[in-house]
Image (cartoon, rainbow, N blue to C red; front, side, top):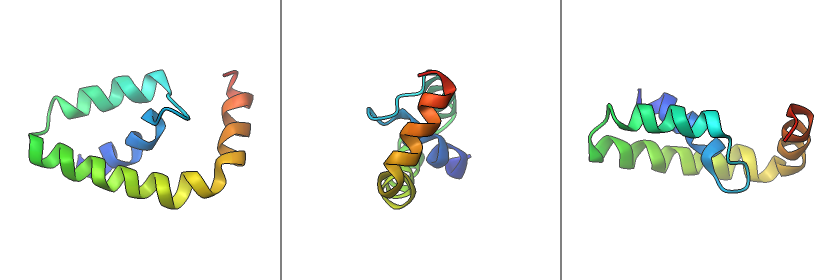
Length: 68
């Protein structure tokens, strides 16, 4: 569950802010204790910095194609 949250978390970043990802993140967070939420968020930030930030042009193109 922590890794799932970690992969959803980047889509809640203000530069992306996907509403369904935020709803899913909130639902997962309700099932985790504070320590696990902190761990999942740390992993999520690392995923964002590793995979999303270096590819923001692609992320933006995908979001635009999605109709955002």
